[in-house]
Length: 157
Image (cartoon, rainbow, N blue to C red; front, side, top):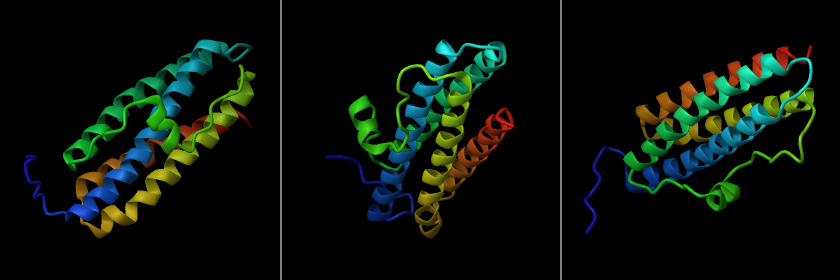
């Protein structure tokens, strides 16, 4: 028999928050994979800059997915962990072929903005449940993705 979870958040709210965080996890993992792909395959005059920037970004995302998954587990839900699960939950689109460097940047801008929107969509549930740990996680993720989108967007000007 599973242990009862009594952290001050009713089960239905924990379920809803966990489902929202599962979407955030799927978006984050899919973005991690896409960014890693672009790191490997970028070419052109911005190669060095983008190769290093993409590496920093996918390393940050690799740490983030663990934090998101662990929060889902702390809420008492299983964390999705397969490509099939992520494909059902994510709004991030896979890259077709190997885009040119500027197209990579443009895709990643949109993808980081999408992750922000996913995180923001979970916030009302978290706020209503007084789930401060999840609120803190969402706030941190939104800050990282907004800043990353801005930095990438600046390369397109």
